[in-house]
Image (cartoon, one colour):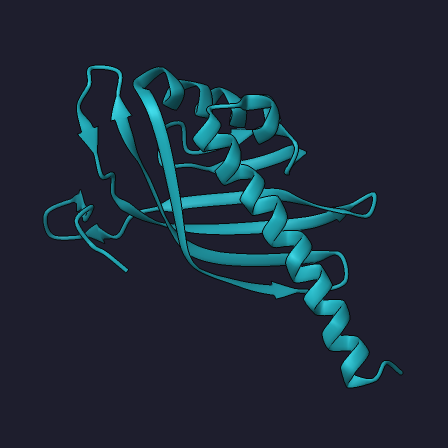
Length: 152
């Protein structure tokens, strides 16, 4: 049996490792660096991103989606708020609010919109990797439109 202190220390270590992986995503976005973005994802990542299609399968599809973002943005910033994690032995999940913003290639600045982000992670060869992510906006059923003006 693990004592409370060592269990807390272990989970604290695991949480820090997962947060570092998610920070790599943010770092890669801000640098517009696809190589940095590749590292935290599992090779077989499944992404339900905000852009079509409904599902992006595999790291190359995920990176192609980010490459399209970089074609539109001159500078990129990404903010993550309220990241909450639940961690098991080899599987973890988390959720947060995220906002992509920056300067478009046409010179227009955008503050972006807040989205809901969910991460599913697996420990692969001792390293936490993002195996699934999902990005969504709330949907107004009556109008049929996404509600992109909400803030956390």
